[in-house]
Structure formats: C-alpha cells, structure tokens
Image (cartoon, rainbow, N blue to C red; front, side):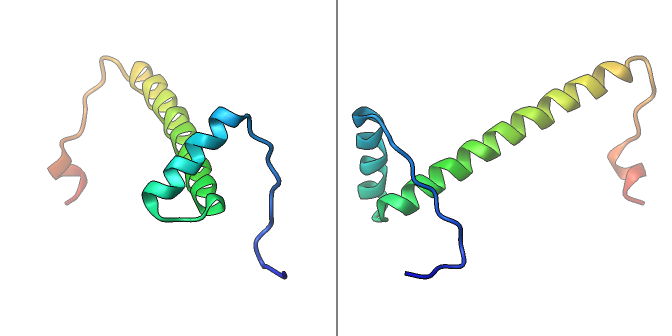
Length: 75
C-alpha cells in the first residue's frame, strides 16, 4: 500500500500495548491512529516543557525591570 506519510515500526511491551489498545477502543480509532496521537501529544508536552524552561530563564534575566502593560503593547 503506497502512502505519502512515512511509517514507523514500533515494538511495545504487553502492558504498553494494552494501554494503546484501550485508548484506541475508547476513541474508536485504529491502533496506528491512537499511537500517532499519543506520540504527537508527547512531543507537544516535551515542546511545552522546553518553552516553559526558556520562559523561566527569561523571567529570571529581567528581574527588577519595568514590565509593559498589555494595553500598551497592543496599541
């Protein structure tokens, strides 16, 4: 079967497979779609964590400075 999207073969331990299968059944999707969605969510969580760490670093670097008000920024 030809597809435009790359494919990935993953081997899961039985307990993890059961969790993915449960998500699949709950959402009414295929195992592949459930795994894809779970991987996508995990990637977004990792990205959010990285951005949060960056924001914390920036907040620490501007201590003592005057902050702009929201209304001033969007004039």
